[in-house]
Amino acid sequence: MDIKFWGVRGSIPHSLDTHGWAAHFEKIMFDFFRDGFSKPEEISKFIKSKSAADIGGYGTATTCVEVSDGGESIIIDGGSGIKSKSDQRDYNNKKEFHILISHFHFDHIMGLPFFTPHFLKGYKIHYYSVHAETEQIIRNLFKKPIFPVAFEGLGAEVFFHTIKAHQKNMINGFQVTPYQMDHPDLCYGFRVEKNNKVYAHAVDNEATRKSKTELGADAGLYENADLLYFDAQYDEDDMKIKKGWGHGTCDRGFEICTNFGLKQILFAHHDPAFSVEDSRQQKKKAGEIYKKKYSQLEIKWDFAYEGQVVKL
Ligand SMILES: [Zn+2]
Ligand SMILES: [Zn+2]
Image (cartoon, rainbow, N blue to C red):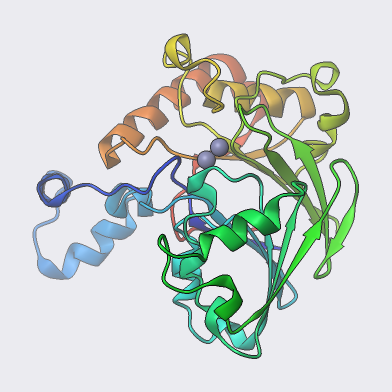
């Protein structure tokens, strides 16, 4: 099972401005010389010595994740990251797409009108959501005056499927089970399973419930997950003023890994205000928390970045 992260930022797409990128490149060039490199032909070696995100940043686009296996895939959410998926153009010769919708906050649906297959004859797009109002909300995205092409004028055939929380659904060969997140508006995470591999998708999630007892019927999301994709927009200091905003922290993610014996977690839904350096600092803080409280568990952890692919 391959999981590709087309968009990992929270709330709104955000890039550094021109001066911000110039400052970032200045820092990279400084590091090049500080690390003892001096020749143009050493640039590639220098870049490979860093993490991809240290050089290119963590990404600008909002939530869109694709889970693939055996040539088939499902897409989770249509944030602005789905535009990059759309730009693949040949779509690996696929003409049918399966999109799960977690909830309707704008960062999770804003890219949908820019997913080109909607406009192509002979294509089929299936939407799946626990929310009964999904069809109405998607139809309203393709409507004047906020978008020039009406839903009725789309080239593709579009289908809407209502699925139930805590029930297993077969979607394009994947077993998908929705579980409720801790979020101000009703939002669902998804457990995706195929060939004995489990991907647990848990954004947007404040994770006020972390133990099996607190989670009750929603504990199934985390059980035996090979990879947990987890909302860490904030840290515990932020939580003093951002309690109830619906986003989690690395600390909470590590605690869930502890409670469920999980070995791999990727933190995401990055704060839209963060520069590359801010994310690096946030990651450094997470590293200190991990070292202090959770290192005996040997959890593989990192911050997700746009374009990343994880193989399970
Ligand atoms: Zn969100
Ligand atoms: Zn949300």
